[in-house]
Length: 385
Image (cartoon, rainbow, N blue to C red):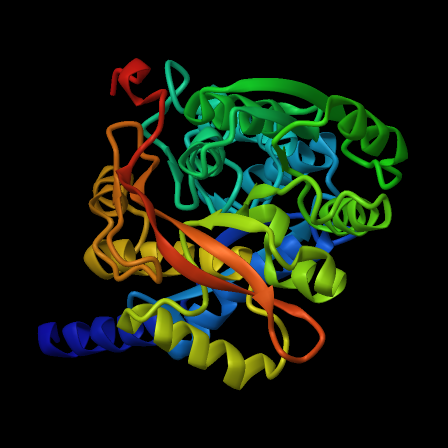
């Protein structure tokens, strides 16, 4: 009888395992409006990584549950609440914009969830507000733009006009640029939904700086660069920009309006490391001529990070073990060297890119040289973890 019971128990266990529900990962992201492609690319980068592992991550069956926050903080918070309370989801990711993160992430952390950011990295969670359940794969917002400030300083510019939308990431952008630039900066804040920059063009012309820095992601950046050219400023006042203002979709839309711009980035599609080459090849096979953006690479890296942790823990039953496995960052990033600082934000290299004519009537980014090596962020010393 004992052998029969043991066999029956084994069969029941095997049947239960075969039909076990996949581990759900909540993805709150921006899929609509002018910035909708940012979230779509981050999502599709995650799904591509999952597909490359046969529908699993780290050997674990997973399901990405995706919802559009519409770039509205209240929506993000409501989605997170539904994911956690109704669906029992403990692991969340996907937020693109810092204003959505600011409204959403605290509730996730307060309810014991783990949040891994593929993009937004506001300063409010990098210093004294750091948390053991909060990780950022992309960058800390300021650090992203510190690279542009360093590049502008390297070129010898002394005066700048810096423009960004009036929200947390925009404030972090200008703070980061100023920190590394070191020269005289005139600050101009725009609206997050603004597409007409005629007034700002007049202000730039009146200020007559040696260089312009502007942070306007997605459709905002497309509008700004086109109007900069139309205002006759292109070629007269050079631009040094961070990567959200020069992603592949922006370059495809503005074409020659970006030629001659200097950009900075933590990754570019011409990177020669094996992980990047594998990602680019897989993306091109899956999506054909669809541009590869930084957001896609960050979504892909986020999924690869989660995969590396699940491979060690087999799931989320032991949240402490999963947390430690994420912190180890035992995966091959498309960027090359990658590790977390004490505040669980990236330490990574930053590069100068030249925006050049692609020979097809458009523009492309070509990596020139490293500008910052093993660069973390300016808030980590305030984090007491």
